[in-house]
Length: 114
Image (tube, rainbow, N blue to C red; front, side, top):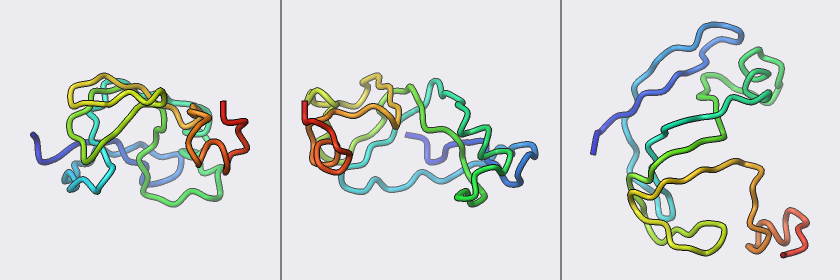
């Protein structure tokens, strides 16, 4: 497994992003490491880059929609249907997709618990 990863970083609002190399972290319990194969750029990313989101602090790596392959897992991980995830699995995620069953989705987000 490579010891570093590269990412484009917003260092200044409305400026060019800079390629940086980062050391890969030790995985905390329950975490996973994913090799990104594709990432979405949505309106919030554009607003953040332009400095139009006052909650944003720089430097920042944009992106919260992704597709990739699991490289490493720390502990048992399951998808939103309860299926076990394994190293090598292809995954896709988006911050707006919820399972509707876990405590976070059912209680804290007002889901009906479907």
